[in-house]
Each structure stands twice: as structure tokens, then as C-alpha cells.
Length: 401
Ligand code: CS2
Ligand code: MG
Image (cartoon, rainbow, N blue to C red):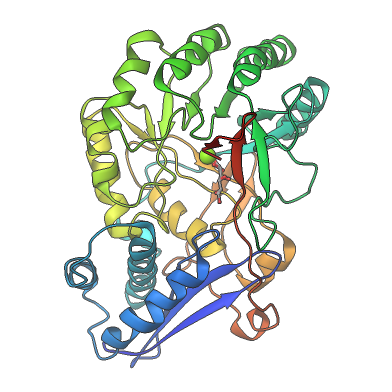
């Protein structure tokens, strides 16, 4: 079965998405997400200029060989742009493979290991009362796990806090700027979780995202302060380029750690996993080289008591979510799947079979991934430049956002 066409579709139904659609000479098609928030056009160009030309004529059934061809053949390995492009090709080829076999992709990954994929939602509020109301809403909707983000007294525009129905941080062509105080954050967050636990008791899984903003010793302090509230995880406590830096956090606290939404290959997390410096790895299909590579990461994680916790923000398209669920339902060491529902506009551009019910996402049993792109509708939403914010300390020092 030969690849005869590959189209890069950039569309903006409320936010930008990049999708690769591969067409074969047998009429089968497959889709892959290539969205890299704030750098969408870089991936679109990488695909258009350097990938699509070498795909035409290739055997669509050779998923692994194509992965290796695009990874080793580029000479310049790794990186978010390259790996998102490879991910899109890989995901589309798995979609085609499933359609050719007449099977959902999870049936080719070993079949179901669970009845549904447990997801967590985002509860946030400017103040504790707002947080409590948001947590209550999520519990009413059936969520078993809830990420809690709160405003910080004295700070404005804190990460993860928004009254918008769909939270989208990439909101302007030029990065907006926010101001941060680690001291104010470390003082306030434990009081938020004390109130949430007091209100909702021990049953609900609570998570929190520190969004790369602490040093290891600050993260150790936060982890210790949160131990009484038994969080499922604190996410991205520190920037993860220095993997051994997590040893310092581990020495001080039992609060579990989740890291990895910005990882793009297994090499970004191999030491973290081998040394059990983390408890959940959050790498995703779109950013970590597709189903083929993400499965390798999860298999390494399974050897070291590390579970999956894939990223699932709205800047990952329904194509990525559909692919993620194929892995989530099948792997033995599934942990949690992040789930931020997309807008109705986005869902219309990306018709899919996955559905939410009672705290779970269910991938469905359609052959392939169970998702597609409506190219005609997509064309009505032209690309709109949008960059992620930057963050500064109160003295103006540039800090992780
Ligand atoms: C966040 C993301 O969902 C999360 O855990 O870290 O929303 C992240 O801020 C965005 O994906 C960045 O584009
Ligand atoms: Mg995060």
C-alpha cells in the first residue's frame, strides 16, 4: 500500500491546530496531530518542506521503518518541532494500519486492559471559594480526579486560573507577560489544599501543576507542606532539563511527582524513570514521537513503577486525544489521562468516536483511531498567530511560565 498524498492542514477553530492527513493508493487515509502551541507554523513548515516530499511513494504499512527513516534520516535528532512532525506521520500510519485491519488501534497494542480511561479535569478559581465551587462542579460531572489551580494573593494572571469556558494561554500574537512570586505561591497553595480536603474529604484524587516554576529545594518544601492532603501528584515541580535535580526533591517528600508534557523523546526522561525520580510520566502522542515512541516510554516506565499521566490540554487536538486513548486503554501501567474538553467548533472540525462518561473517556471501537478532520470546515478557520505567555519575577527576572 503506497502513500500517494500527504496534506498539512492548519486550522484555527478557536485556537490553532496542525494536522497531517495521509492518503494511500488503496483509498485509506490516516490523520496525525502536529500541534505545538505557539510554534504551529514551524511544525507545518517542517512537514511541508522536509517530510511530505519523502513520504510520497513510501509503503504506508512500514510504520517503524518510516519512524526510523524520519528520526535518523534527519541527522539532527530530537527537539519539539522534529518530534511533533514525526509524531503526526506515525499517528496517521497507525490510523491507516487499523483501518486496513478493520480494528481499533488498541486491539493492535494488546487489547483493552481496563473498561475505561480515568481522566482528570481542571478546577480553578481566583480564590478558595472559587476553587471549591469548581471542584464541586467536576465531582458533579463524575470526575474522580481533579487538578486544582488557584489565584495567589497579590498576583494577577496566575497560570491555570481563568474564568473562560475554554482555557487557552496562547492568547496574543506577541507573548503577554505575567508576574510571579514563588514566596507568595509557596505560602498560599498549602492553605488551598487544606480547604479542599476539609470540604471534600479523602476520596477524590487531587492534583496540582507547579508548571516548571520551582527549584528542587522549593519543590521539596511544597511537597512536604502538601503531604497531609495526600495529592495524587504535583506536576512539573521544576524545569526537567536537569534530571538528577529530582533526587533532591525525592530526599525530602513522599508527594508523588508527574513530569513530561514538554518531553519529546525517551531520552528526556530515561534517567527520571530508571532512578524512579518520578511517579507519572506525562509525555504525549503529539509531542513525543507518536504512538510508536510513546509506547517505548511507557514500557520503560512500566519496568520502574512509573505510570502514565499523559498531557491532554486543549492545545492537543482531538486527533491526539483519540490516539492517546488507544494507548491509555491498552498499556498495563496506565495512571491518569488529562482531559480538557475542546470547544464545539473544534469537535466539529475533528469528528471523533471517543466519549466522556462518569469520569472515564471511552475510545470506541472504530477501525484506526476513531477520528478524522473535516478539511472543508477546517478551511473556514484560518491560522491566527498566537504565542504562549512569558513570566517574570517581581524584579523583572525572566522566569519559567
Ligand atoms: C498545562 C498545559 O495542562 C497542563 O498540564 O501544563 O495546559 C500547558 O500550559 C499548555 O499545554 C501549554 O500549551
Ligand atoms: Mg502541565
